[in-house]
Length: 341
Image (cartoon, rainbow, N blue to C red; front, top):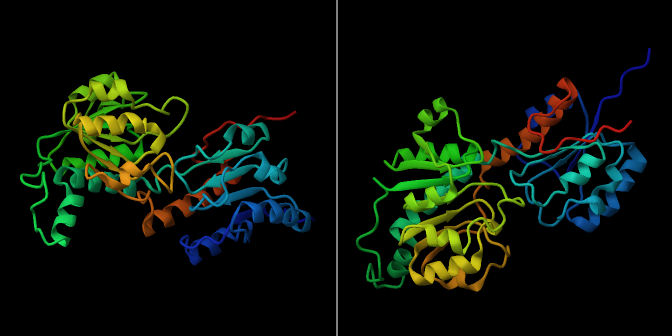
C-alpha cells in the first residue's frame, strides 16, 4: 500500500523565531525545508532548481524582511505554479505581493492578521505620547546642554481627555483603542464597516460614519488601515483642511496612505501641530523634511518588529498552511484562488 506523500513546504530563508519544538511538531505532518536565498536574484535562480531537484512545492513561506526580494510577483515566483497551493507571508501588509496573479494560478495568499497587531499598536501609543510631549526636541535640548530650553516643551500636552480618532478598526486598531483607554482618551473610529455594538462597548469606541466626521472631531488621528487602491492618498489636502487646528497625526500603517506634500504643508502652517511617523513613501530614504523637521517624531518602520511579534508572525504562516491541508481553507486568506477545470 502506497504511503501518502507529505505536503512539501519551503520557507524562504531560515525562520529564526518560530521555535524548534513548534517546527519539530510541524514536520511530523509536512516535508519541510528552507530555500537559503537572501535576495531576489538568488531566489530567481535557486527556486526553479529546488523544484527541479525535489519536486513541486505545495506551500511557500515568506518571512519578515521582504525588501531584498520585492516585489513578490510572477517574475519572482512563476516557478511555483502550477503546483503550489498557498503562499503564507509573515507580514501584515500585502501591497508588495501580486495577490491577483497568485489567485489566477490557484494559489491562496495569506498575510498575518494578529502577529504584529499589538506591537504596532504599542508603536502608535509611543508615537502619540511622543508627539504630545515633543520628545525629540526634549531629548535634543537635554543632550545639547540647554536642558528644557527648546520651544514647545513646557507645558506638554496631556492625553487625558483628548479624542483619539482611529482610521481602520482591525486588529491593530482594537489593540490601540484598548491601550489608549488607559490614558483616559476618548475613542472614535472610522472603518469600512461598523463594529457590532458589543465590540464597540468592549473597546469604548464610537463609530463615525464618514472620514470627515472623524477628522473634525479628533485631537489625535491614528492611521491603521491597509494600503490598497482605496486608501492610497487617503489623507490629503482636503482631509487636512477638515482637521482641528493643531491636531496630531500618527501613521503606523503605510507611508502612501498620506499625501506627504500635503502633510508637510499642514505641518508648516500649524494645521497639524506634530506628526509621529513610523512609515514613509520612500523607505528607507524618506523625504528630507521628515529627517530635519522638529515637528516630526520619526521611527524607521519598527512597528511590528519585536521578538514576540516575529514569533507570532512565523507561527501564523505555518498555521495557515496546516489549516489549508487539514480543513481545506487557510485562516487568513487575502484572495480567492481561481479553480481551474
